[in-house]
Image (cartoon, rainbow, N blue to C red; front, side, top):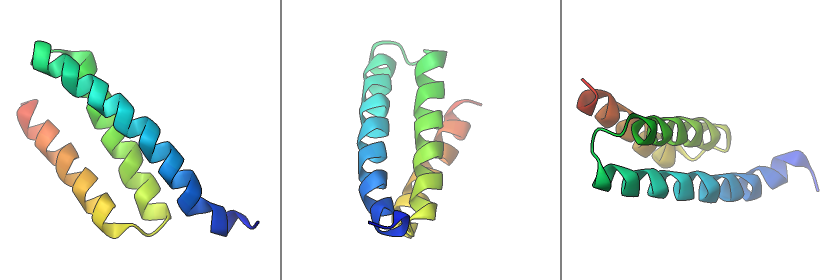
Length: 77
């Protein structure tokens, strides 16, 4: 199987891992909204997902994760 054909499959696996990490970080934020490590984990996960989505041509996913990044930047101010 060519690497190009495997990219969507790899993205799904990576996305599931990052979504789980983001979910855990959101739970931590629910307990303490000032938890810097949780905020950083969400930002890192969203940023990584955005890049991966762009690579496989998932423009809407990339836009959504970019919006999450912008929201986090606003909240962090």
